[in-house]
Image (cartoon, rainbow, N blue to C red):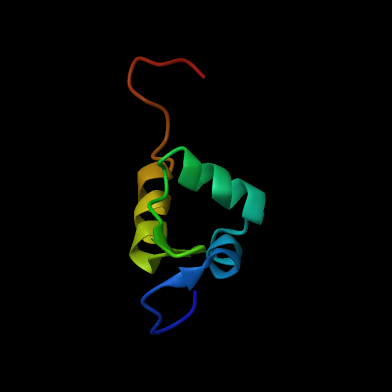
Length: 67
């Protein structure tokens, strides 16, 4: 993660998540990753990346579910 940055570029955000820029764009388009648009530039808050990771973190199998 890039230290002391309030907003990350698409490239930095994609690298932080270890995904392609295309996948990052899909996450943004789906509303899974909030982004800030400044003119034509797209920026992502580091806290949004942290939230996405926490929201998708596997916690093991659900009760009553099958694998």
